[in-house]
Image (cartoon, rainbow, N blue to C red; front, side, top):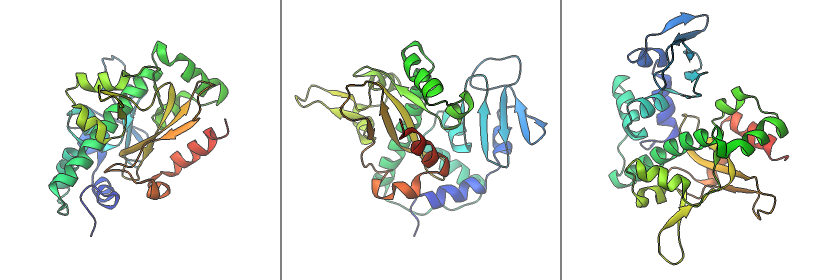
Length: 260
């Protein structure tokens, strides 16, 4: 039996949901060819740059770079967890979610929620002054376009021991919850935590259902011993199943970056 939050369940809910209908509750959309256009709800603008594609089930803002699927939209706009977004959309589509251990499901929800917030943080850092070298690496050395960077939600983990940690603390997320995602590590002396990924270009691993389940990080420092590191096993991610979870676009992207 499929578990709550599994890819089969998430994909069923996603396919049964009309992203245009959902986003239209928050944004006034007008049809433009195959897309729908409106003012972005994530930043202030006078000229519409926010597009929604019903066929692909995706949205993207050419102004601020926000983008994703219907789950991403609800978690960002309503500031709810991935699990809550799944429950709301399942109820809307009259889909009964399978029962699952409350404690175990809470862990899955926590990891997906932290990963979603971390993805946004890494993307913001890539476009900041701290991310200049990472953006140059992607655009000049790897020849990624801005559209590709936004499409694959590529980001940058700054060269700081507690950049992500402090960012998530400000959002009232406890260290114990963040630790579940594997994005922070406990210091050996027990004095606290530090970021697992530092000074790295960040590539989210996205499940077919559209949730960020893990990350791969490519070092920018030449003297870094580990050129690539990945997220550890979590409640939402199993490295044994990595190939099944990666989308075709993610596999293509990582194959490309593995060459340099």
